[in-house]
Image (cartoon, rainbow over all chains, first blue to last red; front, top):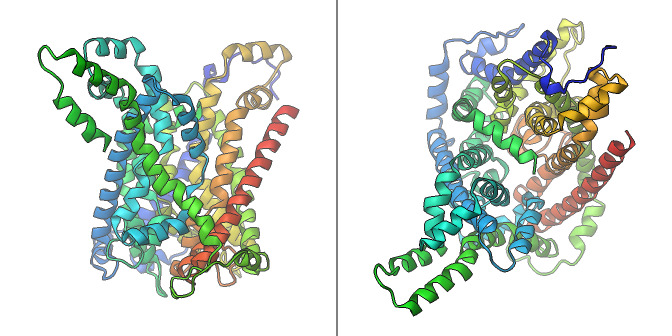
Length: 284
Length: 326
């Protein structure tokens, strides 16, 4: 409708009250399900079945939590520890192997560098969920089905991680620095440890956050290999909580809330890095 | 593996006046072999747990492979695939997958574009808004789906209460799970909710990379904010739009978590009493781990792979065409 000329780029145009209203509305919709999870987790059965629905938290959180944590056959406490073990192992391994490979691809000269990097990029496009049947058979042969190692092993490296690290190291570390260290007699692995690692801490934080979130939230493969065992991850335990003929929602959502809290904490601590990681990922 | 090699090597690092020959070989090893040792873990682990399963999946698809009857083995030839062609469960699941895919992708990317456009201003608390829209992205899909399952329940669900406020379904509340369309909309809502913020940040990132003089030049034509968005911004970020379309295609056609946990009893992997919202990924799970027929599940995986390839290619072409036409 506006007839005035807009010569300013949008990012130089101050937000109007309408933009803030729009953003606020979207934030409200984004946060509401998480808030409502909390409301039901603190409610009694009667409060859940009220119309209009209650949007004020109740005082039953401890009661509901106690029920979740003491339920037989769900192993909720163990599942949280399992999720933590899996997510930490996968994150640590991804950071280590991907930064090593990213360093090699960005700063070392070797035959086939470009071809091999191209293969890494190609593997990015392979939807590896499609191999689940064969992965299950493979894990069966290894005797790993039903154990945490079956969930950890496929996550140890990621093509995205290698790519992300290569890009970051390529920009963050001047070639001269690597050359200088080499002239001083430092071997490749020493250069990695004393020159590269200190310079890529921000990238490690970003990749670590992305990996941790994705691993903690993974559902399909853990469900296939861990379901019905004594070692569920928290996502599998949640699906157990929600299965059966008689589902108690305040209990299910108390469990869901507990499994969500670590990620909200991560978002509060590392939100800035997460935003940057996703936005940098887009430009590649 | 590579690490221990190199560590062992480093302890041999001569401290004083090394014999030149040893030093030469060390240097040679360090520059010629070590780079391969650094990238080896990625390729080895990917080959075992990423590439091998996908190839081996093809072998399994051509065999009888049942978890409940290990004696029934041997080559099945194309049997699994011919069975697939006439399996109404598979074709029904394909229709459901596409229906939910369209209902979740189109609004998702359009709203993400609008949100990115809102974020692409000079804002107070810019970082706060950006972090805020990521809340759905970090929320575990299992947890959020269970909330939505309550949200869309027939008797006490908030969705029906909201509808009743505008005078809809007061006598007979909508049973979201009962009909095909309503269940698709419910599931698509969950997918949209989760991915809008994430995609908006991808778009925002591309928008901020547009050179500012592009906007200055275009001002001559008298572009308002709306036209500025559609005529300048969107065409300029087309590569990222293409990227998100392909990502959403790959993700959307493999949709599993939401339809799985929307069920009143997820363990059955039914996708509704009449399978009205059962997706292909869910059917693969059911065939493989409820019916214990891994050979057939593998064949379905291959079919899905092929479908994803075709749809991703079509979407990529269409997006490029649309962008070029504007």
